[in-house]
Image (cartoon, rainbow, N blue to C red; front, side, top):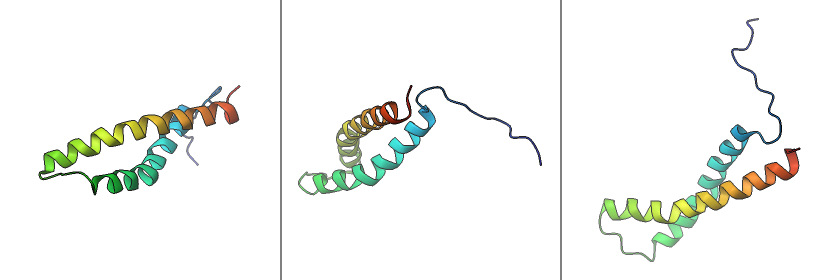
Length: 78
């Protein structure tokens, strides 16, 4: 059996876990929110749709990342 190429032993918060959970949670929670909010917006072009998704999705991602980090800090941190 070959040795693993890399191993990790995080002290405190595992930032890899935080990034992965943020990514998955943002897709599962944020995508439906953006879709629902887009029904009331006038989005005639693909550019307008992309701008809307970024403008609404960025704050959702930011809030999700902060919440996941705080959760990880409280449960897995030192």
